Image 1 (cartoon, rainbow, N blue to C red):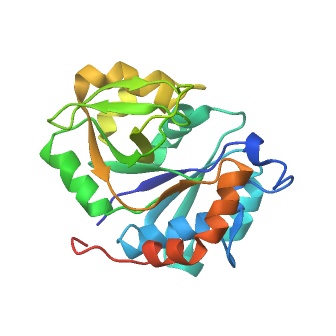
Image 2 (image 1 turned 90 degrees about the vertical axis):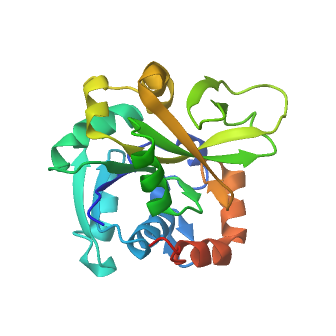
Image 3 (image 1 turned 60 degrees about the horizontal axis):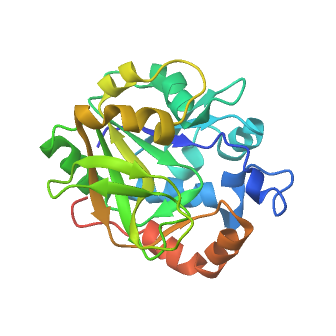
Amino acid sequence: MDVPAFLLVGGMGTRLRSALPSTPKPLASVGKKSFLELLIRQMRCQGLQRLVMCTGYLADQIEAEFGDGSRLGVEIKYSKEAHPLGTAGAVKLAERHLGQASEFLVMNGDSFLEIDIHQLIQFHREHSALVSMAVVGVEDASRYGSVQVDPNHRVTGFLEKAGSSRPGLVNGGVYVFDPSALEHIPNGPGSLEKDVFPLLLNKGVFALEHHGIFIDIGTPEDYARAQGLCDQLYDKALFQPRSN
């Protein structure tokens, strides 16, 4: 499957700085390998081999670690921001690497979702979506903010982080984009979640719910939890879904 994948790995990881004072967050070790290597292996196992690293903070460390990707059986190119651009700005900057792709994947570099990527891409095509996002149900959506979805899988709104604990669907950090969505992303800093997706709701944003493991390593507590789940994460990353 010749679908390029953009990995958002340029953030400064401020909340995790106490645990990783001089390492970019995606290079945090989970077991014997980095978290980012876990994501690369997950994509390779599902047939995605054209990767674009959207780098920024401590970018040279990431490029030194993975180079052209041949060590892991993938092709890696780099889109390095000169100053912080946020998730939307990073995707826009990497547009030159798309080529003639009819869709492309975007994945947060600091979260892991147990996902059948082919299923998400097929869902995206069936709904003629501008953007499709993977969502996951959690017991406490207050930390993340929740995604509102109608019975036809169309995203109708987003609720900001709430003070009280409540279950809900949250953004799993994996998306499929139609390239025309880039026309709605301006150059410069911006957030997909706060600035772009809310403005695209009337143009076709859809959500597919997933039911497996979801974890991000944005805080020391969740990073510690990822260590405890290390074996499970690698098992899930290397699992090849039936649709592959």
